[in-house]
Length: 251
Ligand SMILES: Nc1ncnc2c1ncn2[C@@H]1O[C@H](COP(=O)(O)OP(=O)(O)OP(=O)(O)O)[C@@H](O)[C@H]1O
Ligand SMILES: [Mg+2]
Image 1 (cartoon, rainbow, N blue to C red):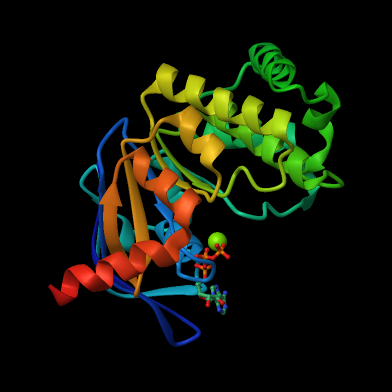
Image 2: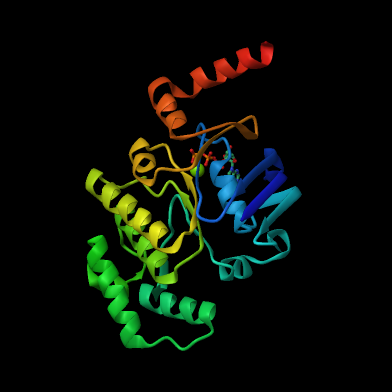
């Protein structure tokens, strides 16, 4: 269970989120929506302790571990993994090298090269990415869509128990989006992982069938609903929701 309680986060000394709270139980899928620049990536990156984001108050725990007292490495060892909105390229380190090292770090075991290689190749095939990607530097020279698929390869290899997906759909064509969303669904069914998904895309929401949709406004979650809330936003935009909210608070 991830428990975010009344966190206030500043970036560059500007308050982005205030008294923000969210609980995600094992195996649940939660979607965060909201207008551009509202703080969705801010909460995602803060969960992994990105040093650009200053958590000035509140508490964050994951399975009774206090995340605020842990480093990014320690948090990832707990099984929390993020696919960022714009995955960066890392020159000089190949996908395979990174994955083998990360796996042996996490499991404290020697990684059998043949088993590793067999699994990695099977995943590449399933995701429709060339096996040569395994030996390329991480995300290097890859298109936006290829990077997202490459990150999905990392998910299948590293088997996180909590996934933070910040607009994993952006940059994917229609077919790639289906492949990625179905693969995520399959991964969740296999592992019962929790997912925090940031997206503006109704199709990925339809495929992943989330338990809750949350809308951020005014530095916190102002509305929570089921998948029908995403449909409402797609039809009428965020503004309709906010005016309805304004009316509610006037009543
Ligand atoms: N590293 C940073 N330095 C300065 N300002 C930042 C930084 N990161 C985020 N911000 C600011 O914080 C605010 C929230 O940004 P954030 O990236 O969380 O928005 P978002 O909801 O993810 O938007 P989008 O839908 O466009 O991805 C924005 O005003 C942004 O400019
Ligand atoms: Mg963002």
